[in-house]
Amino acid sequence: MEHSEKQLQKDRLFPLMVGAVGVVFGDIGTSPLYAVKEALGSAHAPAPTPEHVFGIISLIFWTLLIVLTLKYQFFIMRASHQGEGGSLVLVELARKLTGNKPGMQRTIMIVGMIGVSFFFGDGVITPAISVLSAVEGLEVVTPAFKPYVIPITLIVLFLLFFFQSKGTHRIGAFFGPICALWFLSLALIGLRGIFQHPEILAALNPVYGIKFLFGGNTGSTFVVLGSVFLAVTGAEALYADMGHFGKLAINWSWGIFVFPSLVLNYLGQGALILGDPTAVKNPFFLSVPEWGLVPMVILATAATVIASQAVISGAFSATRQAIQLGYLPRMRVIHTSSTAFGQIYVPATNWLLLVAVIILVLGFKSSNNLAGAYGIAVTITMIADTTLAFGIVLRLMYSWSWPKVILLMVPFLAVDLGFLGANALKIPDGGWFTLILGGVLLFLMSTWRKGQDLVRQAVRKQAIPLEPFLSQFESTPLSRMPGTAVFMAQNFKVAPSAFVELLRHTMTLYEQVIFLSVQNDVLPYVDDADRIKVDILFNKYYRVQIRYGFMETADVPKMLSDCWLRAEERLAIEDAWFFVGKAIFVAGNHPEMTQWRMRLFLDMFRNAESATGFFNLPPVRVVDLGTRIVLEGG
Picture 1 (cartoon, rainbow, N blue to C red):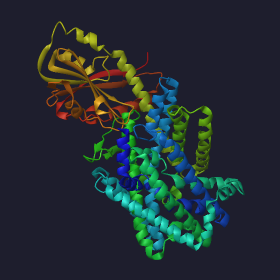
Picture 2: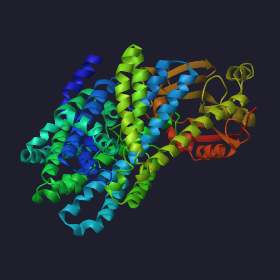
Picture 3: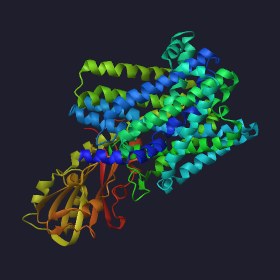
Picture 4: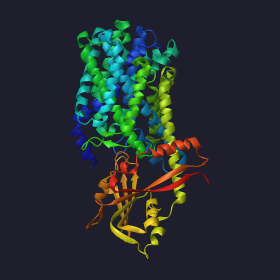
């Protein structure tokens, strides 16, 4: 089976590579718009002398090679589960591999929440800085366009977020070819500059980067490292999108097309500045021949929209995974395609991102200013990934010794921490925004996790054991009516609150009674053979457990309709009634959570998506039965 899947991936390698160029590398592919300009042209950058130009271009080249090729492709992408990657996959792998160790589990969850929180920060900044950088190319065409840069940027961004609900599957086929044209243009523009000043090729020598770092004013060069890091923002997409395109397609498209195109363009920008230091104000667009400026602005805008689309889609996927793993409350998730499973739309995430992006553009007003806010979120996410991947997942998956782990992890972690320190110096210039955003998200996620723990404790206190409760009806059967009743249950050891309340008030049940537990698995996907487990209790009482992966959506009616109780009897789900226990929690005095934080959790709980919508239950056949529970200690 594994061999056939690999063969299938090889047969579809070229289309997968084209798709990866458009989605996986969209973000990193737009970095040439602002990385060199910020590294050599910002207020913190040293004067663009030949030594500085060689040093910066050398650092960009070796950063791409070390972070993208070595760390992510050679190592972190090995930490996959059923072919899936990403920060949350890494967290669940680490939790699974470490076993039942409460202290370790808690540490992993904290590191994971930090990584995920700041991943969303990247999802806010990428659309803002990418689109704004592209539209700023109009100023190179003519300064008369300058007053219109921000309005045009806001219009493009609004349209981008507005059409998210329509789905991207219809235009997704164009993403790869457009981005392929973009990378080809990057390479050709770079070659043009290299032919004019071929001496720039010497920047590939790491000695220039080392001299820049450790020679002269170390303080100013350390600040510039934060700008160099802009060249690798989007690197985490290689790992996060591995499940969509496969490791083989991502590695090949990077190695033979994307990486060479980026390197040629960065060399070309450096060559331009060598010949004309004033070009540092916008080296990307000044590298373009005058006749090609307007088409290049249009292509750049299209590329940045595609890059932003990929980041937004990634935020939707991360939101769904975080919900299903218990890091966020349930939200409405809409599938925008009947054939492409990964095409989803999360309205709450979409509109919150748009508001944050608009605030960024209006507040910072230029890509140069936004560059100060960019980078720190990505470095924090990378540090979390590096720590979990090398320190736990790869070590346990491949039985690495600690000396080997230290030998590999320390250099990569040192690079990540160096970039974090450099980006931390930009906090007063805008990095504070990312820290606040990530900090708020981290606080909300930790509040939700803690509140859920308190809820489970409170529910456990009032729980009634299921089997003893059912045994009293074996000898004294209840009045039964035709039909099927499905009672949603968190586990099978206790009687669902809706079941208890219904009996207390009516003493009547439907002919067929199903206790249904829907469990989110630590696997990305669950095999159909393992999805449903059915136990027949007695007298048409059934216990059904449904499992689904954190990359899947729980469509309970569809899953139940595929379930056979016996070889000759299909589960009568078409006319079933779903009974859902709806607990009404009241804030009490609890030593583990302050009153104001508990009220925040309860607000999140009340505004969460209902079980009806989340599990795709038919609304006209759902009955909510409420119980009042006080969250208090003791």
